[in-house]
Image 1 (cartoon, rainbow, N blue to C red):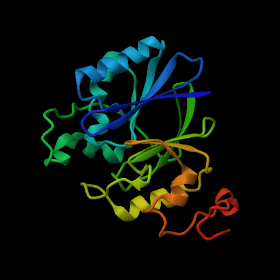
Image 2 (cartoon, one colour; image 1 turned 45 degrees about the horizontal axis):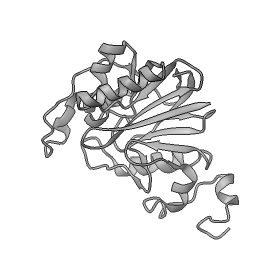
Image 3 (spheres, rainbow, N blue to C red; image 1 turned 30 degrees about the horizontal axis):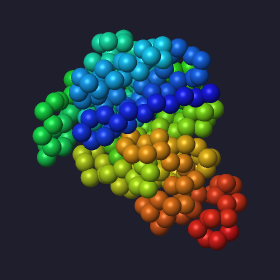
Image 4 (spheres, rainbow, N blue to C red; image 1 turned 135 degrees about the horizontal axis):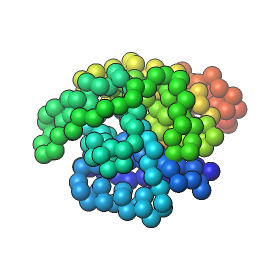
Amino acid sequence: MIQIKIFAFNPLGTNCIVVWDDGGDTCAVADPGIWRDEEAAELDAFLQENSLTPDAILLTHGHFDHVWGVAALVRKRGCPVYMHPADGRTAHLGTALFPQLSLGRDVERFDFIPLTDGRTLEAGGLSWEVIATPGHSPGSVSFYCADGGVLLSGDTLLSGSIGRSDLEGGDYDALIHSVMDRLMGLPGEVEVIPGHGPATTIGREAMTNPFLIPFNEPDTDWWNDDPLSLDGR
């Protein structure tokens, strides 16, 4: 059974997500946006208390608030980093991507293993499908664990919202395509853990997310059979 622990790190409240298979001793860490030493200590304490060793760092995208802690975590744990290559520049830009903020800490460069759409990745004792979801950034991806019914959506799909597309490399049309064509076809009960804010489900977002309502309904059985569908069926 999939187990999940979410930490809200750094001034932007980025969700650092630890996921593992119940009873296992390895875990994956998604988007370790660790900004302060106290945050690194909090993550370390949790891993020690639960006898977990990270075997992968999964990056939904390369924005600085999601990758701040990658280099330090690699030095400490020695685990591989997975990111889509289209976000290489995004990660290297670091906080220069958003110069309006004075954050006082830039991003250390790190090496990563490039991801491709449709790849199956074993991490934390779980199997993850890589779904390319560009739009928030060129290399945004979502990680889908079908057996656990969980989607790590990064900043592509949020609870009641979608990611911004006005930063360098963002593309609103691509973002909507990613959400509607790549994610809304997943089972409605799939739990969505976004890059910021609370968890949600695919079904809840399909029927209530105000950014998605103007678009066509997904052609899926769970939507068409749901009595709360927007067209009254």
